[in-house]
Length: 173
Image (cartoon, rainbow, N blue to C red; front, side, top):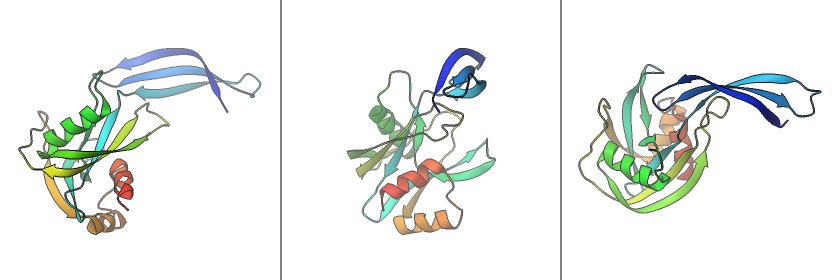
């Protein structure tokens, strides 16, 4: 089951994603060697902003890879050397304008471990104060305030399909 890396080469180097191919030997397989391709990712965060006991803050944005507008929690990529909590506070402010007094660390998930190294940290943000958002250049977002039970209905209706957001919502149950 365990794989031993024999070699590794970068097939493509991007702005923040690199595409890698490894050759691995599979333990207890009689010497089988197999290729493994994957993307490296610096990691990211997902913020679960709880406005009060009944409402959450979400954003809607067009996501080019899937070609549609997605409902999701504020999220983003970690900058080099940035601590996950700092990324979470930055992304919450940039995408929604909100700041939080209370932060609850909800651990991390691997969004796509079959082809990406990304580790996505989840933080619940509470005691929110509104402010002015400052999205990244080229990032067009709409802020949505949604009742928590409605968000679960939206999952059932297929309106929320973003995996990190669904994981985050289940922490609120």
